[in-house]
Image (cartoon, rainbow, N blue to C red; front, side, top):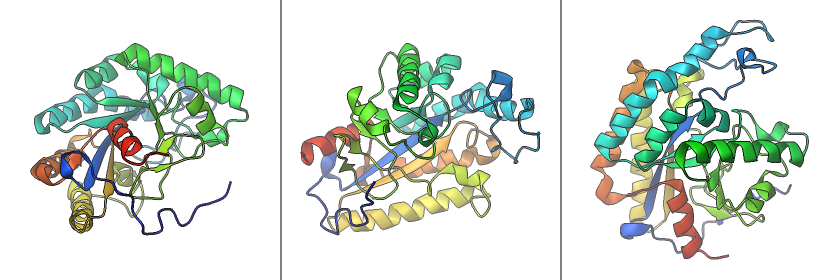
Length: 295
């Protein structure tokens, strides 16, 4: 793989988002609960990242960690769905297949509200660890079936934890996917040699930083960070530069009361700036880019 360290090289494409806007904002809600690895579910190990780093020995069941994840679909999802409705913000759901299979009513409820569902793999795991394209293809197909059963729609977008395998993008292209989001290297979509559009994602304006050292502590930390990002990108957009801002959330993280204000206040800030930006699902971002910047 040859790394592209230049990208657009400062010569941004002639791209204007719907409504005459230069700044698009994508809100992502990750639906991973039930798809994290758990010995309780027959997986070889249990996920260690949660409210605290698990101290349960590797290979032993960890019901506490499993319950921390379950909070997201039992409680957090409903709180967050209500806020999305009140602020009328569209979202893309990065949903794992096993989560869709096990928590179908949650995904169905969110899909009924008009949010797009993208595939987040079968399990919440890196696709880089697949040993063969055949094994990865089996799990992609399982995830597609589970998501379609829960939402009524086959996903056209993809994002996996960590990194893709050498074969992921070709497998996605064969299955009719339009975009992947395993790109962290730009403020705009771009095309990949596989034929897919890369709608880049970001891990900075992301509530996972509540779970990492030197990250967000109070809800206001994330709100301030997102507000600063909006200010910078709005100023660049006002100078004619097209931009995309990604904001990522998780049911089990900002679904908790002590962090929920981060979600609520970010949505309120987006609502307040609505006339200055385009709030869109990622599938729409990919489609607009596809038309505006043909291969």
